[in-house]
Length: 113
Length: 113
Image (cartoon, rainbow over all chains, first blue to last red; front, side, top):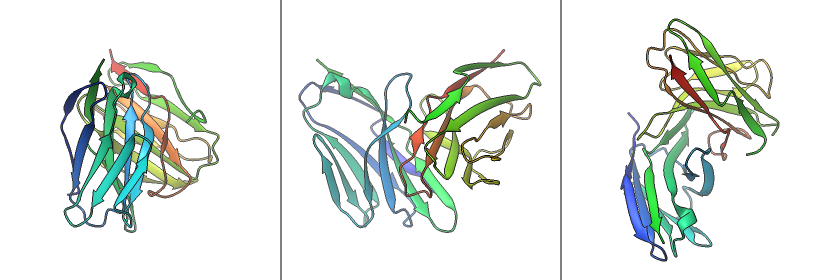
């Protein structure tokens, strides 16, 4: 069935360094790829998303890239700050006559000051 | 995200008991969703509803039931048939359709006594 794999499961970086989280999906019908940030004990919140007709999108220190041929997409955070520490989830969504959003297992990011 | 609420924050269930989790939104969103989050795993879809009086099963619907009598409300009942209900339950809503951003509620943590 449909699947989204996310790597790494844990990532530790020094403040100011970059962080990269990668996801691969299995269903080629996927056409919407959101990223959510979940701080400890809080709800997931959308930080950036990309649609299948775009290869890259950037919002300040956050960027997402999409390679539809290889079926993978990545989150890039530059100049990391301690407040970036959280769990990040990728997801792949499709609308093929029925609802389907599959989430990755999450990446716990630690930014060390 | 402030427009979607869940209650209670914590819920305790006894063996054989049905419990109901509340989800309310004032965002005028058509679509609503219920997810289950277990440690180290992503979000798994339990049920979703695209319009009032209509809902569909997600990937892990067994042992759960929902209703959608009003646009702003989407309660989830965890029945006694759900043998492992301990988890963090998240409700979400979107304007409509899977390609729209989902806004999450603060979650309900369900524990079994």
